[in-house]
Length: 470
Image (cartoon, rainbow, N blue to C red; front, top):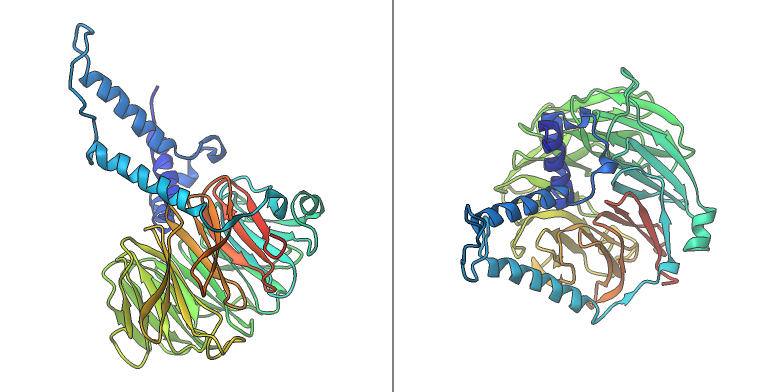
């Protein structure tokens, strides 16, 4: 048996995806051209690289314990390890087991009958987004497609699954008519009439709610990692591995302006108001840009590793960022240094979310909070006015990829590669509901009425939990 370089590259690519290094995975795939290899990902089970390495270690260990004549070499209780002592490996397993046991102490496990499972994607599902006005859920997958699902508002579980209708949004490369690979990001406009999708082929596309392609936006030279509509729906902002961000006119499809400030891939973008926005990159910097200006309005430096995500607060006065340097920071355009440097996580912080509370929201009487989700398996809630951590949510046992507040800010959903969707009480910091799926979770999202939360899984499915009924 032999392993080709393409096959090895694909195993590394899958390992990076399964381990949560999504941006690294896309960059590796782009440079290694692994997506052009003739490999059917559906035939490769999760954890394949780890399985190969473990089996290889077993054979090496056997060789080290057997003499040439076949007799066994007595090495006592020593166990082979490439990097860590055996007792540390077993301790890690014990820690994860304890986290799982703790999860059962509080929080009610959601019955399968309250969960609507949406099947149809042929590869992992990276992203989900609810329509802001209708009971429509969009999902983007590694199978070169997005889907728009019509979710029943009353039934859930198997009854809802039978009633679900959907549109398949196939992503083809216009030049070659080949499938465009991963759909990496998607976003609805404010009135829910149009859906924007970003793909690995470097194109952004706009679709109507019936799944019909309205226009293709073609200027980027690398995968599109982030897409955001402005509040009026007149402009679309995209960020790409090609180091640039582009503002598009959504009526004509024309490029309003392309911004080329970063020296490495752009990982996230976020509008501040109708004509200014922020971008972040693997180059460790953040830029605040304004349409019509050929230089950045502001440059924030302070992170010592790549900046994974940025989010403006509801009033557009504070910008939160998170990084592989284990920190989250809160910035103001009025000063160069961060307002707060939040450093309690012990591993990379993958994403952040502001609560829909405080000034400028529908819940002005509640304090503004910032949620940070980390590869250290925890979620932390911060009082930004004080710069203090007010809750640490620690029932996950694997990296946490996504968090989302419900519309009132009363609950927070979190999704992890431990297969669990958790719903927490923000005020108490306690686990309220939990659902364990079949594989790791990439993203979670609440609908606008707050009675359903969706999660997308590595195992090619999307789960919709009826929260009120659960």
